[in-house]
Length: 90
Image (cartoon, rainbow, N blue to C red; front, top):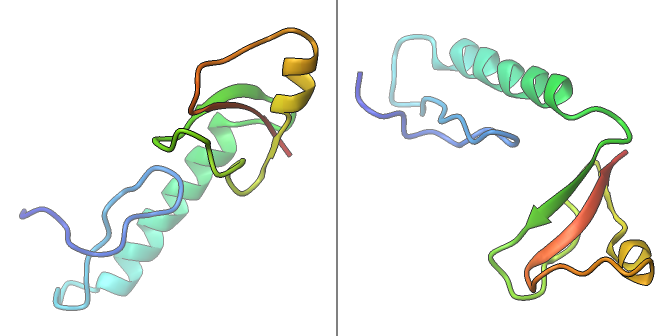
């Protein structure tokens, strides 16, 4: 099968099938999106802490569902290179 050309899913960027495909793309895309959501829910648990990297020199802030607590960490003496922030899962 050729590479899918539809909109990528939110969490893992699975490619969906666009409207040109006649193989029931709406239901297939629904399954792909559901898998993406389930994987995100199982992989990242509430209270999980991780370092988030952005390609920007100054990250834009935490992704949806996460809290940026870089200032709390830096006030405790932890430093990170530019482009990284500490995030915690809500």
